[in-house]
Each structure stands twice: as structure tokens, then as C-alpha cells.
Length: 182
Image (tube, rainbow, N blue to C red; front, side, top):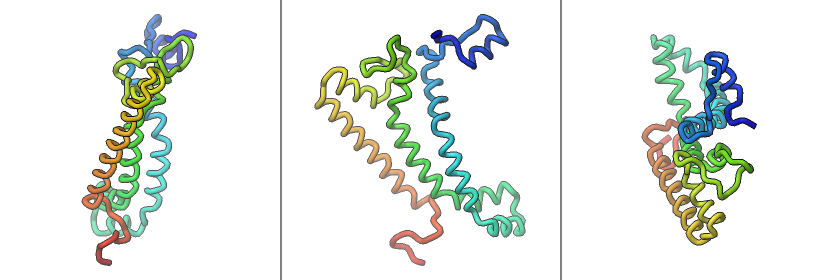
């Protein structure tokens, strides 16, 4: 199988015959990884945001429009505040998911015999989890690999706790949270 074939390269060849891009080269590695991550994650996010949009009470939108708000002001001052819990959820899940990237860089690594733990992705796509797995399983440094994973766990925990601590300043809940007045 040629690395220069595919739907996008076929379209490029229609515009400029004989031109094909090796998408798995180190020159395009980061762009392809970003596009793949967006493609893999956008479906669930859109579905969750669509459900949140359908949960916004129509009475509040109508009241804002009657009070003279434009559609943009209504979206900014009514819809977005009511969607902040969902935005918060997607932010936390996105941060955790982005830090744990492992499979996509390995799948995008060009090899002759398929994906293997010892395979090195291009330097631009060499993520922390790949380093930890290669240290643990490819090089047999089990203690070092376990220490890396524990440090990574602590990093994710700290970042997540920071985001959770900031939610009181920007997330609106319809029901008052603990310690607040009704």
C-alpha cells in the first residue's frame, strides 16, 4: 500500500497531477494528529452541546427578546450562562483526554510491520504517555515507567483540581451549591 494514496491525495492530484503528500511524514505529523483528534472527539461534544441547547428554557429566550435584547445578546447573556455546566464538563474531559493522548500518535507512526510498542513516532508526536510505555515495556524499566505514570496522574489531578476550584467564578448552576443560600 502506498503512503501517498488516499482520498485527499486523489483530490490534490485532480488539481495538480503528480502531486501527492506523505501525510505520515514528520513534516505533517502534528497537523494530522490535531485533525485526527478533532475528528475523533467532535461527535460526542456536538451531541452533548446539542442536548444542552435543547435544555435552555424557551421562556427565558423569549423574555430576553421581549426586553429588547438582540439575538447575540440573548445568546451571550441567557444561553451561555445556562450552558456553563456543560462547558465545564467538556473542558475537564478535554483536558484529561488531551493529556492522555497515546493511541493516535502510535497509529499515525509509519512502520512496515504494523504498530508496535518499540516504534518511535515522529518527534513532534512523541507524547508523554508514549514515553512512559516505551520506558516500561520496550526498555524494561518498570520502576521508572511506573514513576512516570504516577507523576502524570498527579499532574492530571492538580490541573483538574485547579479547574474545579475556578468553577465557582464562571459556572452557573440553577440550584445553589453547597454552603450557599437558597
